[in-house]
Image (cartoon, rainbow, N blue to C red; front, side, top):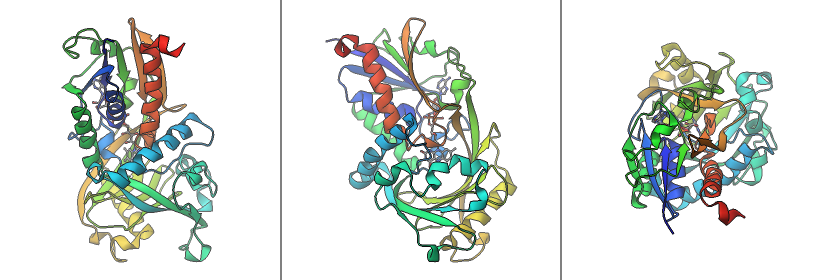
Length: 362
Ligand code: FAD
């Protein structure tokens, strides 16, 4: 049986997770080729900027909900059994204000805010928070056990797991997806299949140019203060496309204060007034951060901006023949690239197996 040669374009969480699962099959020889790699911080590279946690916003009965559902068990396993991956359990609380109904943030969070979301039987300890425990202006709240991923540890960990399984890594910038089909990239010669995990830049990559992929700008502040738990709220009084959430990353990764969800906004620079609003909202939502004191008691590690690769209609997991070579797409995960990563990679691999082993499927 001859090995099949695969190039995964993209080294964000989508490309790395797909490469890792592919590398467990000895029939596949995998090369990851990308402009940005773990360790880089760039506006064209979403993955390092993410919180990142598991708080599904996918709608019941959709493929996206299925991908999120299939991702919980692998993340839970990492949190329980693989401390070196930088994933830990955290309790989280989702606060809901009736006045936010219809706002952009509340629409984005609709399933998450529901008292009866599809994932209530997936995550442990899902429950409603008693009304007496709710702060002023909060109409209802739910809580459950989730995970928070330290992306600065997790992305390099994914690389190391891939390397252990024989995956090669190459820096490359492609103008067209078919440029991945060259012996310069895959030394084994002929490329049998390309996996497209280019995130937001799928909107510009030749052969793909998917204009339904747009940025949803997320600004964050990373601080040394500890929050104790993850908190999320349905909206803010500062604008429809601003958000408020707090999560402490595993293994000394600091606490992420978010945020914003500014669709169509490509701005890479930090907006200092938005940063102040983010910090004010965070200490109000989570007084434990500063012991009830003001934002001057936040100890800032860095400010950041990342662009979520949102695709109208949801992530694209499809196979397509381009210039006589199979391309399997796995991009456009919006604000859910981590929490859907294993489910999406599994779905992409099913298409890869179909494309490369058609007889096995008869
Ligand atoms: P990216 O990480 O952007 O990677 C794209 C890769 O493709 C890069 O390696 C790039 O170099 C490469 N590439 C692109 N074009 C080319 C080309 N032409 N040639 C060569 N290489 C190319 N998700 C969650 O699940 N939970 C969260 O809590 C969460 N919080 C977030 C908070 C913020 C502030 C932001 C910005 C995002 C958040 N997300 C979260 C979303 C998550 O970060 C993204 O969905 C995810 O990172 C997308 O990963 P990706 O691998 O598809 O894309």
